[in-house]
Image (tube, rainbow, N blue to C red):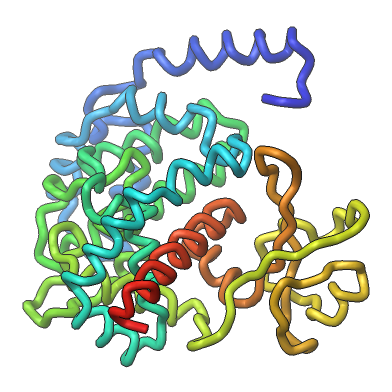
Length: 344
């Protein structure tokens, strides 16, 4: 809540506290005032049985802890040097190398078939769930009904949040039907993200793959399917094989804020950024598309240049600190592999 005067912060905090712990409209989501429209859409647009959808919604439970978790200050509020310590660690890198060694054949196959750097695939799984250790324990239907029907009323972005989570609830029921799964049993994070790679239901339907051919794209318990699904996600979002991701940059004076830290498809060129005063630590083609970034380090500001593949990492989570953590963890693992001459 930075940039607000102290009295405003106190007032907002009191409002949030009051709403977070307010009793939801109804415990039974089949009787929620907005459920009828959702059920109608599932019946009319997707040919679901009305009573079946109502029974699923009746089972779903409002979870105060989900609303509370969604309303906590996000990790994006942390400065880079604190954020980095969460994900780019020796422990996570060592676990990543163990995961890489254990699933090397699958990662090599995914690299051949999808063209995606295995270090990035391993790093994504490491950052998202610590290699399957923290995939989430919430019933996804609880998370999505809570967020679709109740959470949006506590936020300013009520319509966009409502629409997003309603779409995810719709896709949860669709994927359960397509994959012959019970939607009441699927588990994930408090936001409804699922499996080793933390796919939202719509991403699951668009990008999850049955990579071991057993008839089910199991991103929850099957690392083979998780690897194939993450690699497929990246190639579908434009990953460029054997192309650079990012590099450190140096600049003598404070740069223009225009375009800085904008996680969008880069439109500037390396040549243009060089002309603005950025000195890149590595050499790239002057025509490469890139964008500048700054990160608050412990003892100053770090400047980086992100290229197209950095932007693609950002399609997984559109925050520069997230993408940088994925990139740096991948580089830490790659350097350790090269030091041991295992795969270099």
